[in-house]
Length: 387
Ligand SMILES: *Cc1c(COP(=O)(O)O)cnc(C)c1O
Image 1 (cartoon, rainbow, N blue to C red):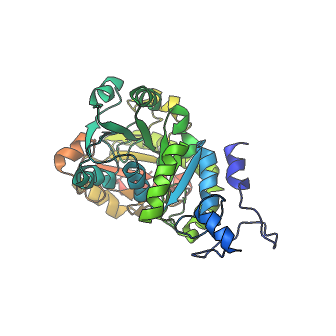
Image 2: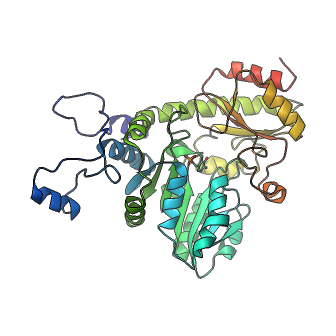
């Protein structure tokens, strides 16, 4: 079946009440029918919920839907996107190992690489751009993982998933993709050779700015390692959040298509706007990787960036908005603008920001589902150039 159907019709078996929609299993543990069943469940001879840190029907339903959408063998849910990134990577590497990653990674992922993993003797090399030769050159004998985000946050840089998938396979290392920006509706990294896909479900998957959540899906053997780490370190997704996220997946395809249509419309209009120095959006012809974008993305995504010239101009623009929200989230029904230099990427040095294209005038716009004309009216009046 197709993604729209899978996201709606994948469902935990009904209870004796014959409910149409899935109930919320808000319980921390489950009762054993017999001493023998308890033994067999703990020995993993039979499957079934035991304790919500490692299994819960509501959480399992969410994971099962996402697994099918990504075309993965197996998966687990986590409490947040960062616990997914951390659990996925930490379950693969050990002391002495090395990670190769695109330089443009999410702020907290950068903190993991630069401040936390080094404590356990895990090093990394950042690669700029998408030239496969540079990626190949970064691989060392102790490299265990290639990690990428595409499109990246907030630079909207792409990496060639097919080329990196082939490189990882030929080097015998794991290829892990943070698919938060594209979602499986736009790109299925596993079809390009990814071994694990991690998600911040907080973003487009929830899509309505209500809950935090995350997931890891991919090759069964790698997911088994991640499951072991999660079971014993405890970043479990709360069943209530899983219930919200499973419900949200039912409308993911519909929402993502509309986010992308609105974003392309705004990106195209803003490109004509003299107060905007530069617009970046994967499906604009002006994006340096627009050909690659069209090869590996179904649509351009729900996020674009504009450069309004300076921090001062950005500040005036943010304070003049009356409809768009100034907030650090993305992927919401509500359009959200963020100024990476002063907020999400403020922990980076000026030099580090420059390397990933974060200029002081850069504003990230996560385009929501409001009417695009209302959005454009607000953006243009805040730019001081109403229609
Ligand atoms: C937000 C985000 C994360 C972290 O997700 P949380 O749910 O906030 O922990 C990881 N990767 C990317 C690309 C993100 O945008």
